Image (tube, rainbow, N blue to C red; front, side, top):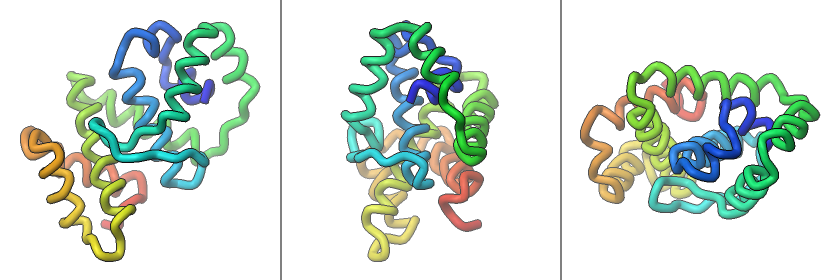
Length: 160
């Protein structure tokens, strides 16, 4: 987990004081879980898939401080696919002038995918989108759904 924090260029202070930092960690970790790169339980929550176990880990790391995070991160040798996921998410979020918009796209994408994955084969992706929009009516504003679907395809979680 320290490697993800370090790779996302987050500090202990960011984690302790900024909800957006914690949201970003949760969503990146969830995507890693969907790619079978992380073994952690996630449940659908207000802002999409959420792991209390993960929250405990990153909060503890944040309390330990930046030097501990950096030391632990330097000891971890990421797999190529782990690196590519974090790089892709960072680039994707960075393409927005407003990081909050990028985070909402990420939240929308992970929520749609979580609903779809949990309910398949009875749910189509269209069903998952409708369910997500019912839970989060704001996702229909600002083209979040189309951007989320594009991100899921880019991540290889949905077929073109």
